[in-house]
Image (cartoon, rainbow, N blue to C red; front, side, top):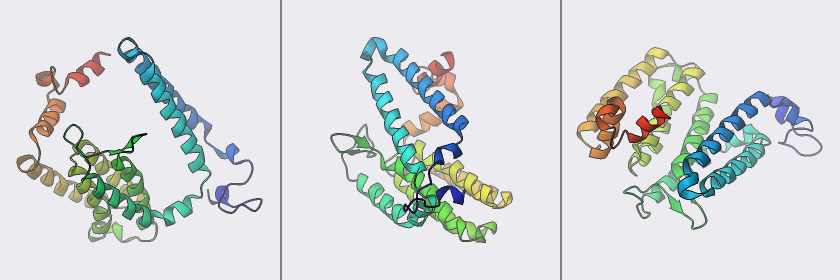
Length: 242
């Protein structure tokens, strides 16, 4: 993979000519297929009520995402990893700052730049992965139970700030992400299970302390959708029917 990013023609850090030949086009085609199907479904679901505006907006988002993907593919991943600590600190500042914004539907999760709104928690997902990779790359102490403390802290800080917004759904996304990265890196399964057990105990404590009623209803609707089919589980039931 390193050869793919070696500089060429006086442009260090960028792939030489012919980089497109090294792309896994089957993966790109699969991603584009999923995006295309999604846009078709959005168009079909909103055509009567909102015209084609929603589908066009999703199409523009997809085009912007494709452009960002191409740009990132040309970037030397090693430079991105080296910048991970600074990106992590900048992301934590964004997560702290959003807590002082005006709430939307009871949550302070968005920066409204008038032209566009964005959630720093989405950036935090990517940056946390990069930061964990940066830490894991230079150490092997995560193979011991005590060595999981620092990686756990790296993931826990943004998780705590996102939970404060509150955004329980996004917070939970970090759990499998953390476990998958450490497991792939070589952490022992029994150690990850111990961390998972501690996390489960923490979730149980959260149920009786800081979780809001609507958050509890969402969990219960996931477990018992038929009992909440007219409210929290309505979307789940409709998706199954579709």
